[in-house]
Image 1 (tube, rainbow, N blue to C red):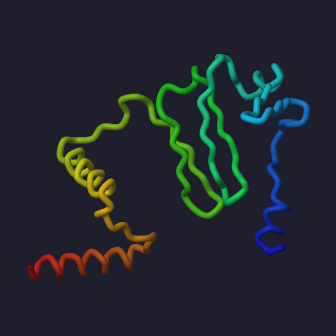
Image 2 (image 1 turned 90 degrees about the horizontal axis):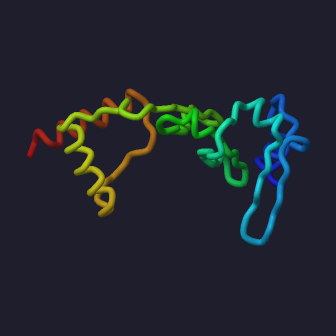
Image 3 (image 1 turned 180 degrees about the horizontal axis):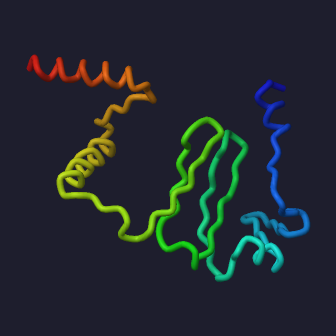
Length: 144
């Protein structure tokens, strides 16, 4: 067993919900159904009959499920990985995101390049690396 597996076995989630008593799991060969008790639904503020959910993989084999009530969800819930072991949840209301015509045209071109496989993306880089990369690209373009 690797050190990584040992570390993940020791991981636990801390909270005030007794999952064994509050969530009932029913499995069949095609699906898994979760039934939440009324106490749990009150505790986490679920009022409607519809839920929105996002599955987030923390690392291979370890995932969490985020759920939000339809009444609470008046937009899009984005889950962003902002660092190793750190996630950020951003709720964007409808109409909150505005893109000007020039930016939309640029994004349309980039989406088309990505779909064709013509878009080369760099990995994460520091501010200094980005400045060197931008200067190199500028020097190359200036010569042509």
